Image (cartoon, rainbow, N blue to C red; front, side):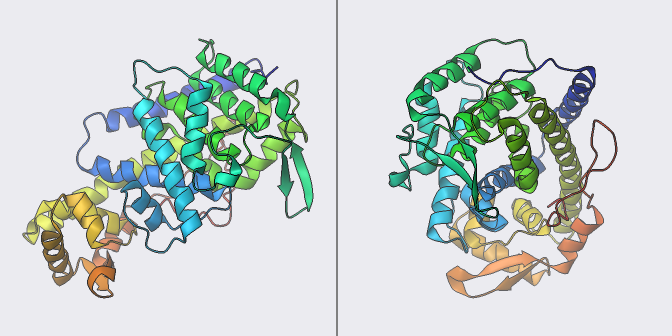
Length: 385
């Protein structure tokens, strides 16, 4: 038996409609994208990867998350966090590839393969294989176990049920089905490690398959990373310490709807910001006679990313020699500032560039769609970047 969808209430349907409306607005905004769209897409994927891993205590800087998306070397990340980041990047890249695959079908092999991509750097954790024994989730702050997974002997049968449910054409909205896929996998806890990452990846895959919007923009992984304690709390409320699929999971459904609402709001804000910042930067480069191939890099710098020569080469599609020359031109014109020497040299947006970002900045929406009142942000979430 798996957790079942409760009857959808009228206010939940109303919130679903609001979310779909925002998604349609975003879909329209990116339906004929300019070059600015690539900047938004890369940054969104980097946030999803970074924040999903942060839930497990795997932390890298936003610069290194972007480097992972670009298949570049890290600036500061140590080996294990970097391996975990690249593993999740690989799994998410495969998810994006599967989004419009006409021959797609959910299978245990697919789930186990995604898990292997994530966890292959840690072979003792049995990547790609179901756990061989019991498993517990421990709250280190409380110094106690807060969840016990079902017996390992019944995991294969539960996973078979989960796959059957994913392949069924159930009459529930995609966001509800994706939330239930996430919940059931994380409650089955089929793997020795990486269950949360795998559940979040599966949720993104279910949403991406719906083709409602460009797959990168359907994830709520960033939201879950920014609201980790709330995420843990609602899972604890539903699970009540062990595998209880008979429990009511309405709190989980509503939590996910709030997450989708706010994540969609953030993406709409960022799309507006990116377009405005891009337009101003385009004018600045044109006035100074600078080749517009520099635009993606200068836009990244405006949003606070550190730039390397390899970053510029990837974004502009030029050789190392051309990248070095272009970066020098940007520094000479006061658009970037450089630090360090030779291959270790990095660049940041100058005050001119950063002021453009600040002038176009929009604070993140903090509305609860069920009450239309404000929800508090965690203390460390202060900007939309």
